[in-house]
Length: 138
Length: 138
DNA sequence: CTAGTAGTGACAATCGTTTCCATCTACGGT
DNA sequence: ACCGTAGATGGAAACGATTGTCACTACTAG
Image 1 (cartoon, chains in turn green, cyan, brown, blue):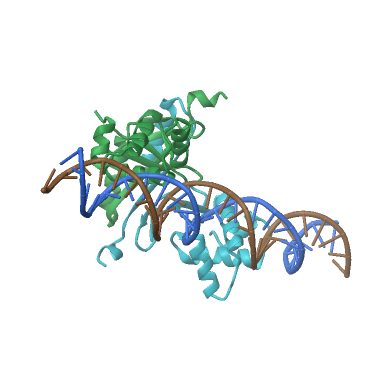
Image 2: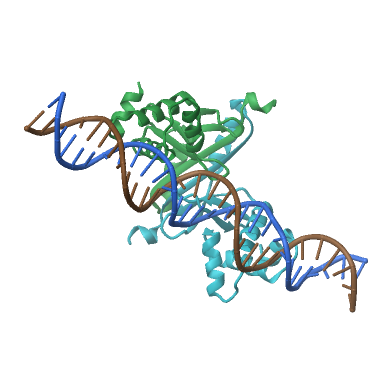
């Protein structure tokens, strides 16, 4: 079930750095920026070059093992995805907590638009943001 | 109907530069990046500082007279919006052409998620991209 | 007309991300 | 276990989009 090993096999050679990055991403749970992940690795005593973090995350995205969203500042946030399903999240603007949402309605809507628009290769991104129960009281 | 004058009134003083920017944005029709708009203005003989382009576009967005999306490179693309309605677009990845889409289904879905999630102040962005009939043959 | 304030623009700074390149290392073959 | 090499690393520098600084300009109310 989406163990680090599975991810590592998908993206190339097994190195200590990649293992650390994948571990940290999984442990983090929610969406994280590359820079934040890099900082976490540093403080955990597993220093990894920032661009290695970027490359590993990019490889995970290519392999379909991570999702990407953009926060309001344009930064890319990554989240580990154990199974290669298309998924949408509701993301907390304050703490980064993410909750998968049932997105069947959007999917069918998007497909309908794709069919009736005359456009080809229609892709969609849906981003929901809010304040989670925890943060809304703070 | 969304004449430049209306927009200018909403965002502060009337200056030659702002008039040029708003004009160029309206004339362009689809989504444009700030930099591209700046270039267009320059070649049209109405040079405006890049900084002013950014500020004017930001002011239009604040006033609800422009929409913003992010392209895949993270650049912000702007589009003039004559009326202050929340609207989603299907955007051509190749030429920037945009087609408004009926988004009632997503709106109700988003509201439903907002109500049932426990999250507060839920906002959504939906971005559809594809290749328009023109570009799909090229 | 004049004052006062909002707007302008050249320049530099910032921020996230990518590229360069010299060095290192995992790993399949011997 | 040993090698060779393609692949991986990381520090520095490049990069593109955006924002801040600040002296200067020019709307516009009075």
